[in-house]
Image (tube, rainbow, N blue to C red; front, side, top):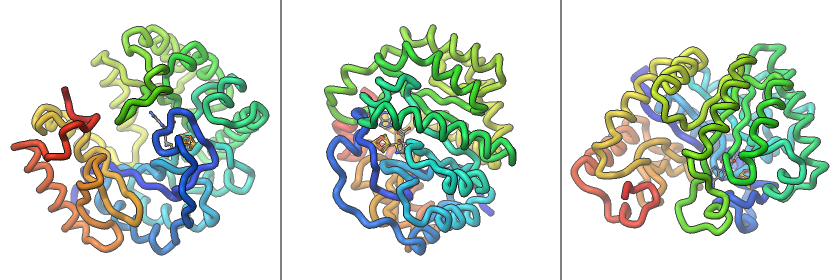
Length: 333
Ligand SMILES: C[S@@+](CC[C@H](N)C(=O)[O-])C[C@H]1O[C@@H](n2cnc3c(N)ncnc32)[C@H](O)[C@@H]1O
Ligand code: SF4
């Protein structure tokens, strides 16, 4: 197998049962869409398994909405045996049957997005009822127990640091410790356009750092990995080492990190090109967030063709930006 130097994300289902206030894809009710066919998903998985060291099985929708989840995860198990594969879910549809499917899978991680354990704030952010917030917490604990019995997949939480959630982050960390969670990831809010809710909730990284460091110490004392945008180089190196140990694709991970560093200042100001690649709609593989930058279709293009077109995009960006880069949120100022 040739080197797999890419990371990609694709949806298992474009629909979502939540309407989170900060979610760029779901500010408005989504158009009615059919679930993806198993044939489409199996073809896409096979291509991504050859191209990528890491694949995220969710992007803008809720993966547990797929009506044939056991078969979908079966296809992912076959295609991604050597790939670092993460499923990211809001956790609201977890039940005994779905927990069984995920706990028996070859996924590396199952991440549940949980910004807070405060029921009122949870329902404010996601539009769910406080009762469903309590149910999600119980199902996360059941998932963690089921995965712990087999030793895999690693169950993680993904939280967004916002003005409203930051004061509750330590409580979330305590919940993670008590529930057998293996990793907690914290992101900043992102928006590619002005967005009143996100603009009001965005936090200054410098002021959030003391809270994040406290949470890091709490989690480290209980052996829970904590991944957050930490400017400290030593902490970054430690997190990288922990990730190398946890991934089934350590060579791809290390080379990918090196590639990102190398490209950082060489791609005419683009901070996002080529990482991660995104599969949209009917299988188009986007090089960056702009829909004009498809490099082919994951169900019909060969892996060699996709690699060649990605290389062409990189070569172009090393010399000059694309016309579409003007005004893009990922273009460095
Ligand atoms: C779009 S969701 C799709 C998967 C699933 N529905 C979920 O919520 O986990 C994937 C991840 O993106 C995060 N997310 C959504 N909007 C975001 C934003 N504006 N900034 C940062 N992260 C965001 C969610 O919290 C979630 O962890
Ligand atoms: S659950 Fe996920 S996809 Fe759905 S609205 Fe919230 S962040 Fe967006």
